[in-house]
Length: 173
Figure 1 (cartoon, one colour):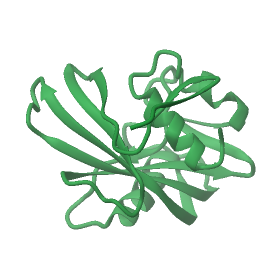
Figure 2 (cartoon, one colour):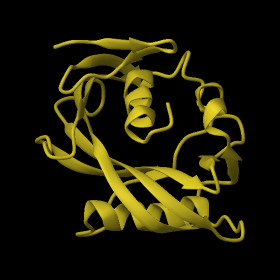
Figure 3 (cartoon, helix red, strand yellow):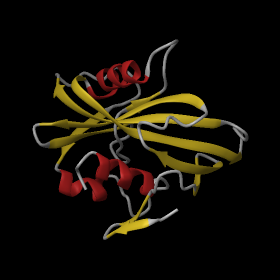
Figure 4 (spheres, one colour):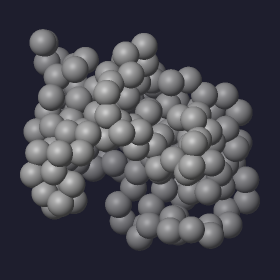
């Protein structure tokens, strides 16, 4: 498989495994297009949320920023998980969403060794509501697309190739 680069670094290619160490685990992470749902346990949804030309980022501590994301509850669909997590973490309502693809992580070492986790990744147009955090997320920011690489610290982000592919598929790279 071909690995391709942007000026900012490696971009995940379809199905190419990328070695990652995160959260005390070693993983092999890969990108999969929307028509090719990879095998593994459903591990939630993540949304590149766009509002008024900016992109919504959330943070627990005001230091590390990410896209709203989370795990499914009960028998939620991928899209239902996205809508609930965006509402809970970003105090925003999804107006329209487009599935960009999936990330698949194979845990090869660490406490979850053997698990294969699959997350859906979306671009969502959202309407921001009043900021009223009530779960673990305490901060929300609206960031210009040109500032995303810096705000997401892609230079040192363990999942940078997946994030770059996400931004590319969302039309923001």
